[in-house]
Image 1 (cartoon, rainbow, N blue to C red):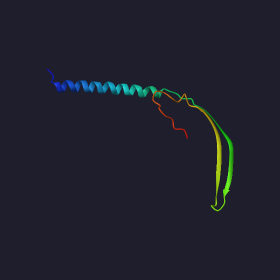
Image 2 (cartoon, helix red, strand yellow):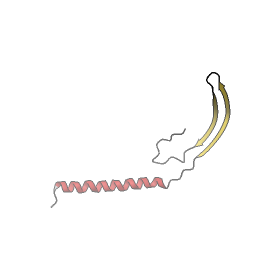
Image 3 (cartoon, rainbow, N blue to C red):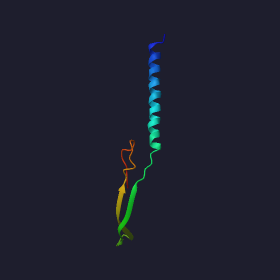
Image 4 (cartoon, one colour):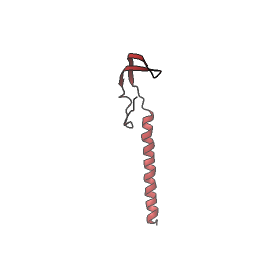
Length: 83
């Protein structure tokens, strides 16, 4: 006859091993996910001006960015940081 604590220990570690297996299975699903983002970059305007008195120049760029990042998302992606 097993004691109460032996039964609790067996149930706890069985549940822990099942959760560990499920976590590995979930992580494995993102390994086979392939993302194909479509990004189009364009330079609309570039200007260069000299700052008088400071001794340096300043460049200003205007970019046109068109990106379709929907293929990047899967169940594990919550946010994308795009710079």
